[in-house]
Amino acid sequence: MYAQCPNCKLTYERAPGYFLGSAYINYALTALLITAAYVGFRFIGGVPSRLLMGPLAVFCVLFPLAFFRHARSFWLAMDYFFDPVEIDPKQD
Image (cartoon, rainbow, N blue to C red; front, side):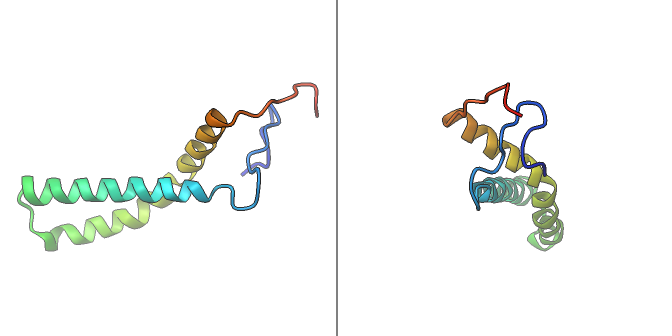
C-alpha cells in the first residue's frame, strides 16, 4: 500500500495501528453475511447444517482476505468524512 496518495499527497496511515478499525468492519460484514446465509439456507431453504458448515467455513476464510483492501478504503473514507484533512496542492 502506498504511504500517500500520488495525486493529492494525502497520508493514508495517520498513526501506528490506524487501520485497526478496518478489521472491525471486515469482521462485522463477514459475521453478518455468514449469519444471513446460515439462517436463509437452513431455515428458509431447509438445507441441513452439516452441509452448510464446510462452504460457510471456507467463506469465513476467503471473504475477509478478498475484502481486506475494501475495508481499509472504507475506513479511510469514513475517517476522511468525519475528520477531513486540509491538503496543500503546492506541497510536494
